[in-house]
Length: 355
Image 1: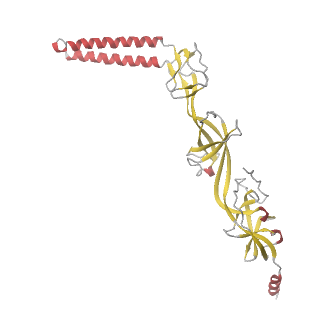
Image 2 (image 1 turned 45 degrees about the vertical axis):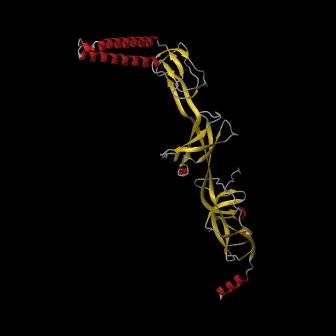
Image 3 (image 1 turned 90 degrees about the horizontal axis):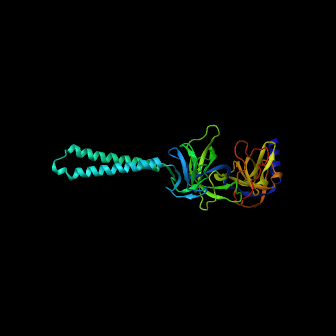
């Protein structure tokens, strides 16, 4: 008799009028910020190859120098004398061998004497090349074309092989290294576009692309190094600059529901799904919010219908009458919090600013 009474009461229950709409699935968006430091495509610290006194400094800080251009000359009188002496030895060896060749057919010289003359000429030529090399090493030259920095070397200074002359940078292209979390390793493939903003120019954003990623992930920080390449056609950027890197990553597709459809209770957040005219409670976890919509983790299959308005008047199992079924507008959803505790039932997630 009690069961019959419950059925009669349910049959007589008036359906609650609600507004419902279909669930949309949108890709989960994660926005990650990192700090990076720029370095030149090619960078070299220049040192002299031998000790000596500076006799000439042939550049100013900030100059653009060509590959092979002389930058600093050291005192080289001894090396020049060695070159002159070696050149004289080569001439003597050539003259001696020439005389040997002229009388070779007369039989006055043995084959071994002629071979000795040839050997003497080769030795003199090698000594000349060595002397010229030692003389050339008294000049510091640019190993590649680029912009050179300031120098502390002045005329009259004595420098050694450990004295820094200057730093040379090829900065037509810069590399920006930054740390990214382990969770985005697969997304940081070469060629991926990233946006970078210099801290010294907060109103300017440059487009860079991932050139490479480190193959090792830090076991302490759980991150890895990414190297992005940014063209520097206007020579605006400088090596050593710090940048803010913004990464917008697309993840799995998740249900997107109106914020007004979500109800908070003692057991956390939930909403109601309409199933054959009956409201069914569906627990959920909020992943992100934007423009009145929430991306949620919930058991909502594609095409499911949820109560968008009037959910406060129903309970699990209530009969409902749907007066409209407006399709949810597909919009971009941006994740505002990652890591443990994101989207918990403690309260609504903070909305990310619209860009």
